[in-house]
Amino acid sequence: MAHIYALRAAVAACVLAGGVATSATPAAAAPAALLDLTCTASSTVTYSPGLTLVPTLQTVTYNVSYSGCTSPLGSSAVTSGSRQGTFQDTRSCLALPASATQSFPVDWNTGSDSQVSGTTQSVDVGGQVVHTITGTVSSGQFAGDTFVEEVNQVSLDLLQCARGTGVTSQTGIGVVTLT
Image (cartoon, helix red, strand yellow):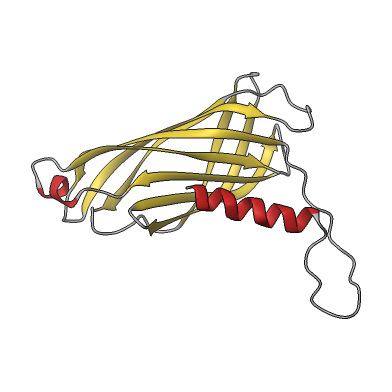
């Protein structure tokens, strides 16, 4: 996960430094998006009846909590939040979840909420599954902001997938940013 943060820091440094010149003619630089909020994200996902080596219809329940939220410009009193939900999907231990679009509310500790519409993507990187949601806050607090949530989970244990009820839960940790 440290390499992801290092990459983000390098990209942010390039943006703040005005980017990299790609031609002899100066171009107008696009304004950098201001960071409105950043939080630590912790997720718990449960599967019923449980992930095995065979694709099976699962009831997937997720609970993602955001903590330690900071607003670099001091423009928000938000310090924590959460989102949760349940859906059904055919899943197995041998395939990552397919990319999909989704909409969901995020409830903030201030009593406000944000309605987010985004696309999910999952990749397996060196023993970690990285789940990313990228989208836009369509209404509520932070309306118009770009929403990016990245949560890392340890890859599934195939031995556990082959036993009994298989994998019934996973946890992960990551970060959410609104710009």
